Structure formats: structure tokens, C-alpha cells
Length: 68
Image (cartoon, rainbow, N blue to C red; front, top):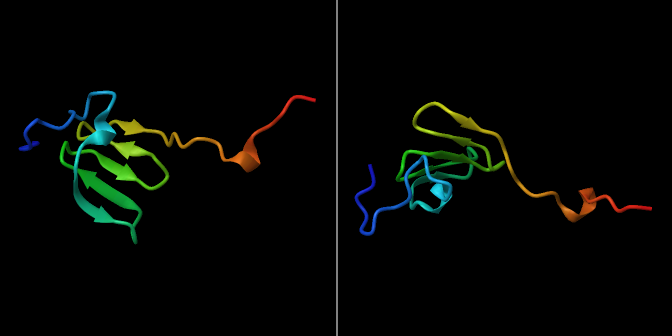
């Protein structure tokens, strides 16, 4: 899919989110990367194979628990 030189990471690689944007629709909450990955604003992903990657955003500071 990717025509960039050097080529962007594939949809199967661990760094797939580093691929360049082809389409960005913040009003709808998604972006299409040149490797075919749909990246959602909640950090979830849909791979070209149909595999779903669950959201993986880090916890905010208001959600961090401390030991007593």
C-alpha cells in the first residue's frame, strides 16, 4: 500500500501507528494511515485484515491510584 520512501511500517508491525496519514477526520474520530490501519481517537485500531486492536491510551493522572 505505502508508496513512501523509505516505506512506512506495515499494518502488522509493532510501530504501525508511525505510518503517514492519508485521511484525517477528527469530527468523526478516526484517521486512515497509509498502511491501511484505521486509527480511532480513543487509540483503538482496525487493521486491514479485520483484526481489532483495543484502545490502549495511558491512564490520566486523575485515574492513578497510590498505595496507602
